[in-house]
Image (cartoon, rainbow, N blue to C red; front, side):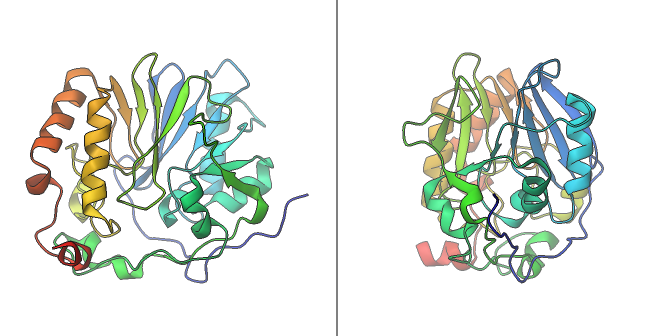
Length: 284
């Protein structure tokens, strides 16, 4: 029996869209990305099999769209064996309660992220003063209160395995949030990044709407630990992935991915680190 769940008091529909909204893209035969307005939800599993996993849960008031995308790929009535959360920001858990109620499926996240997912602790305030465009300037309007999933969410296994995702391991990639994780499959170099780095300048309203592809660091207005964010990017670059999908932006593969990630590591201060902002200035 599911325990009572609720969103934070500041959760609301966010009027944000992009040219890729509603698009489903097969990146690999067993990896598909659905763009929910400005954020990506990933489906991991072959469409001709009944077993698959959902990674992240989109924006508020998007459950019907996500369910429709899932059923278009896996068939009417399809349900994932689990939902894995890269982290708990509102644009990655915005429809999680409706999806749990629909599918009665378990949810997993890093243990450090659980207080934000069990109603115990709000995220640090987003920073509208950070260097960046209109999306950054309006960040104070974004939800930050914790949601409460009760006992419907549990910690990822300490051994690094990912439930119901054979061959994948979770990698702790903090910085954007303390408990942020990325998911990696070493057999073919597949990386589900989350927001550890992205391929659209997420603070720019124009670039978000156009989904202009360019490797960037984590979204600036929600990133609270820039030294950890730098170390996480370096960690992901060291494994030399072949394919990557992101929380925001289009997928990358092969040399475009490896060269772009190497460029980000070598020029992190110029590409990713804002010149000013609450959390940047605190570290300085």
